[in-house]
Amino acid sequence: MKLVAFLLAILFVGDSLTAANPGFAVNGERAVTYHVADSILFLEEAGHYDRIVLELGIHAVRGSDRLYALNPDLFRRRYSQLLDVAQDHAQEVVAVNIPWLDWSDSHAERARLFNAIIREEAEARGVYVVDAWRIMEQCGLACIGEDGFHPNQEGYDRIRRALPRAHTVYLPMVLR
Image (tube, rainbow, N blue to C red):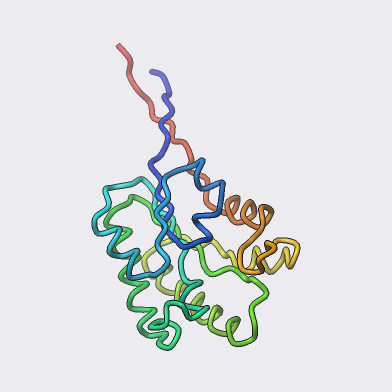
């Protein structure tokens, strides 16, 4: 019997944080969707993956996804639906919450509220949550990019390293 390595099929679904994180390109496919509802629609048509990583919510905090910014209950319903659809299309789902990005007081309050929703809904489904808020807050301004809205390389690396390890799986194979 020999152990054979297989790369896992990983799909990263999220907004510009996902699109800009170079570590995600190495480990799997990316689907850039800025809004939770778009992610639901995308995943409903997606194939099956070993792992789906969800990194959404910033646009709800910033207000470009206005429906959610003004209605946390709607954000909860849609994020719950997103988790359910993701679990239908993957063996494992990982949620990355909204990172600290030196937000204004009003944005920070909304981000904390949405992060609580993400955690509650994910935990209710047994989904692991990467606490990007804590990771970025601990690093501080040293991990925020020049645009003030995205992590820099160090910030991205810290978030990526917090993902549970599952980049390769080894399966026993009987070779004849």
